[in-house]
Amino acid sequence: MKPIRFVMIGGFLGAGKTTAIGRLARAYTDAGLRVGIVTNDQAYDLVDTKSLRAQGFRVGEVPGACFCCKFDDLVETAAALSADERPDVIITEPVGSCTDLVATVIEPLRHLHGDLYEIAPLAVLLKPEHGRKILGGATGGGFSPKAAYIFLKQLEEADVVAINKVDKLSAAELDELLALVGERFGDKQVLAFSARDGTNFDAFQEAVGRTQAEHRKMMPVDYDIYAEGEAELGWLNCSIEFSQPKDDASGGGEFSLDELLVDFVKRLGRALANDGAEVAHLKILGQAGSDPAIANLTSSDGPAELSLASEIRTDTAQLVVNARVAVDPEILAQVVEAEAACLARDYNLSCDITGLQHFRPGRPLPTHRVTD
Ligand SMILES: Nc1nc2c(ncn2[C@@H]2O[C@H](COP(=O)(O)OP(=O)(O)O)[C@@H](O)[C@H]2O)c(=O)[nH]1
Ligand SMILES: [Mg+2]
Picture 1: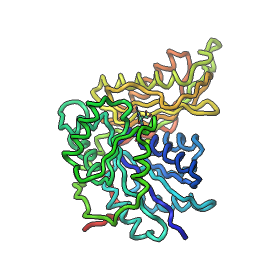
Picture 2: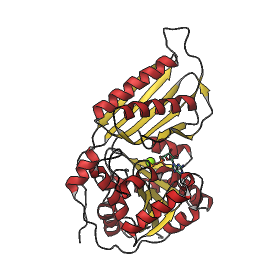
Picture 3: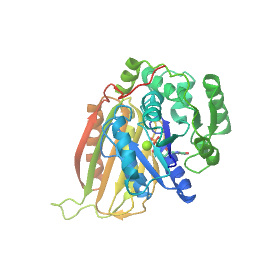
Picture 4: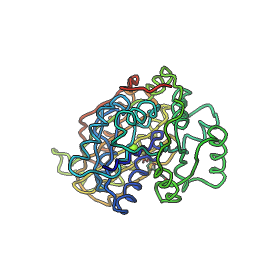
């Protein structure tokens, strides 16, 4: 039987992996291929899974830890996607703070299940918001050197470095990034594209459409720095319901779901910036029965963006908040709770937070790790 193509799209938190995967899955589906997707996170209740399912894709989820620590779950989830209808392609999105994926996921998959899967080159999306600072060696603001270590290791193990979000880069900014990438990773295929508007997407699709060469030397990784870098990130997932106050006849009435989400993301971004906390990725999905809306913030100095509009007016909405911020998770939880309460008060709504998980990711303990 023809092997299933296994495509993994890596890159830092907020680099545009889910956006690129949605576009790639659409391109494959339009070409008549059957596609399955596997998402992954350290926590439960994932915006990415809901977002990709809302686009009509079949999505399996590996929550609770990264693929490398949950290798068997990844294999089982991929197999479950094949249970009813065998996909031609499985696209996987690893956690954006994860690295060493070649040694802990791709090579073990090739060794143990090479008869089932044909492995695509590992494409890693370069996030321009943090890439210029980290590759340029800037100090101050942004992330600590240990978190920057993870960012650079992700690029080091890539077969293809794909600079994303070119639609928002000037020609000079793109040239600067290309030069910085060329200095460090001159031996790699480098391309620049936009997962959002499709600029040069053909080149990206062509690059991940090849077959990965049998793997080369494994990349050295200092697991102490990696673990400490990951643990600097506060992780928070929760659900929030905003609704009309039960005991108050003069409730807030209908509100625009899109505006509420953007307002919430802006307020969270401002509060975290006041605490000097760098946002890696803050995403909030809102739903009022049918189509969702999603708002994002991908750096402390970036704008809040509505990546998916619902154009819905409603008097009740369910939100899922996924926040990854370089701050103590206790502070992150306090900020989310306080800003949700303020938002509810300003819109004259009540708010109810459930399923709050907040933590620092634990040390990665890969199921397998191939060495030279
Ligand atoms: N301007 C622009 N924004 C993008 C692009 N790709 C993704 N984004 C935005 O970046 C944010 C994070 O994207 P997402 O796909 O969730 O990133 P992930 O964390 O790597 O999966 C969202 O607001 C996206 O709309 C792009 O090509 N251009
Ligand atoms: Mg994602």
